[in-house]
Amino acid sequence: MFRAAVALAACLAGAQFVAAQTNGATAHIVVPFAPGGGQDVLARVVAPDLAAALGETIVVDNRGGAGGAVGTAFVARSKPDGTTLLMAAASHLINSALDPKLPYDPIGDFTAVAHVGAGAMLVLVNAALPVKNVAELIAYAKANPHRLNYASAGVGSATHLAMAYFASTAGIDIVHVPYKSTAEALTHLLSGEAQALIVPTLGSQAYVANAGVRILAITDHNRLASLKDIPTVRESGLPAYEFISWFGLLGPSRMPPDVVAKINDGLGKAMANPAVAAAIEQQGIAPKPLSPAEFARVLDEDFALIKSIVRGAGITAEQ
Image (tube, rainbow, N blue to C red; front, top):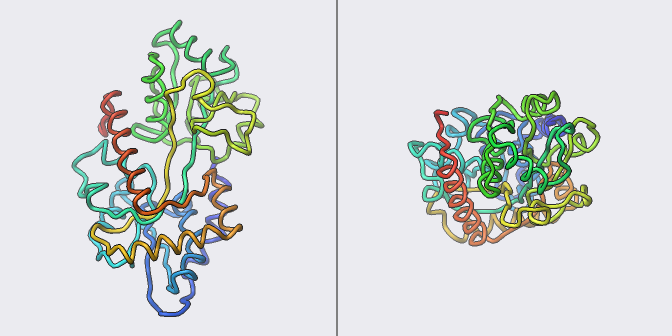
């Protein structure tokens, strides 16, 4: 599934240091995970053009550990001068919702700097399951309470929360079976050991080509241009449901507004480059620049939703 992301990351890894343009300053984009993941790929995609726009050197700095907490805490403790940024995703909020004891507040200890985009997810079922759409899946689950199961990439993962929220919204009783990764969860879906799975749009063409999988819907409110025949969950039986994952740059709290505005403008210019936008879209993410205030609202609203899902499903980090 992640072959495209890993390949792109490998190509970009050699370009970790971006040449300084004018003032010789150096900024760091911290990725709180090892190289090769989605956040790492995005950081390396936007770094060269962002460096050019800011007139600075940008270093992509992988600081993995503790499910992202190590690198995230490092940024929270850094000087709020714009030289240390975090390439964050929805997992930033999910981790805190699951474990309130983390050494940072995911909202209060950070500044919303620049939104990169959002990625939807796909509702998949094993092709042998006798359902063709979301409405039929819900009806089947209601007729067979606690007999249908769904796979995830682990407790508290986006794949877990997306389906837990789906089940809660639909009012169905469906059993969660966590695996170690999305790839492992997909393997068990294909084998029939799991009947359903919600996955990121990354690698979606592989699902289309696999006869063992049926794509029922997309979790965004809009259809994907690359999968225009796949309906949204909203339009196919569950109008109250939407689940997307944001990606963006965060800085330490108390960053000066003028510094935030400069970086936000620089990322907007970087994303205006068709090559950069295309590379972001290749990751299944729709590029969408937002103002810092708009991005801050996305964070607040998403954190409220995630906490609601976690409480409603009784999910804890220890499960």
